[in-house]
Image (cartoon, rainbow, N blue to C red; front, side, top):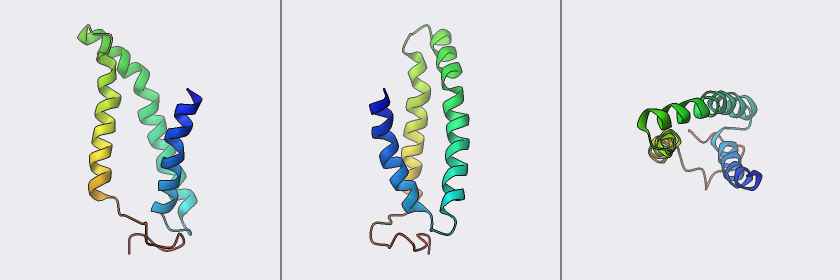
Length: 94
């Protein structure tokens, strides 16, 4: 399980570093990441258990993480900028 977490966190960390300019990177990276991980990650066990019991299907709890992943993937692909050609210390928005 740790290997799977490492495979997911590696690309996420490198993407978040490239998303923000160097002068605000630490705060801009850490605050939303930890809030998101606390809110979405913290309620996954409760929500998954509730959905599994409410639907009567043991795999019903997988709906929540899959739906969140799809929504985030769509929003990310539509609104986040491509920073491949920029220097790492440039502001990616401007």
